[in-house]
Image (cartoon, rainbow, N blue to C red; front, side, top):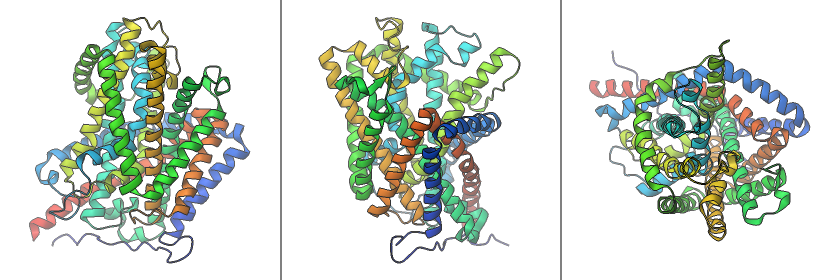
Length: 539
């Protein structure tokens, strides 16, 4: 007896008139009410919220850190297996002969810009410098901090956090949505990724709950990304204007961050209302072109030879150590070294994995939206390998220049001692003359704006797609304005409640429910592909 036919339709109720025309009322109102309660709580009880979030965050990191690590590792392994296995690699997301909607350049630009682009401007300098001072190899006394022998370990861990694993998390969610949305013709929304497990139940509260969790995770993941980006944008604006009110105790004030936040989100709402094929595609192409130009600048004026060496050795060390790094879980004990390793892993690796998981419903759905017509092999290589290589290049050229100036140049700890958001501009201040510093800083401020707007407007479009039950390009201006405004208020209120640490805490907590959905999506995808292969052999 053969397998029963797969589920190829879901009846997601949508309103036919009024404010919610084209949207599912339960998902839309449910997600808006929950976000509204979060905003109200943060505004009314800012001090208590900051303390409460910190307590819950520590509990999640302690009790579910291993879960995040294993889930992230399994995502990479499943993606590689699907890409390398010939029968699955050639499956097309869509009709058998369907061609991709976007050119390779636009496709990659939109994926990179929405998925991780803004983080490059903050972490390509900040993270290698941070790991030069402290990383697990230093904590285990394998190397000494802030020395030339530490460079390779600094890059190994930097590549680990920005390489195959984050993009594997995005890819497994995007591939699931693309497969069920375009190969099985189900709605392009998160609940469709669980069709083999829940079947027709996805038409009920089960499916509504899945989509609501995905919306909340998206809001929180984007809040972290925009929060970090706005912090760095504020530093850049201060570097150009030198206005005293913008900085207090070496950090940007809440006032300047809120002004930058409003500017970013206003542009994002306009872009989201324009849709993928206009505003988002245009901005993605623009910031990718600017990114290539900035990389060229560092290749010419930076420590290019040092960067080539860092990239070469870093890649080798990363690939060799990847299996161990992916699955290692350090547990705190009475031994000081073990406690330090566990704390480091919670602050860096587990925080990152939670960030990427929280970001996954947004990025996964977005890259699925722009990847129709691609094969599974093409999708996975394009969504994992190419963005990872771009990240490695960024870290080598920009971070390598910073390390070279600190170890062998005349930086004099200016970059090391700067805050996370300030390190890129501290690097430029050491590299360049005052006039050239202002020109390049202005360019970076503009690039930050385009990346932030691309991330936020893509998120708004994705949220509307989920709320509308998978109707692509659902860009009703009123809903775009609501979600843009909600993101603005959430980020602003959390900044006042506890700064960037409060935003990080709420994201780590919010990622936990979606991590379970993500694990079920992975199982569903494998089951669906195997089931379709069995059915095809039986016909």
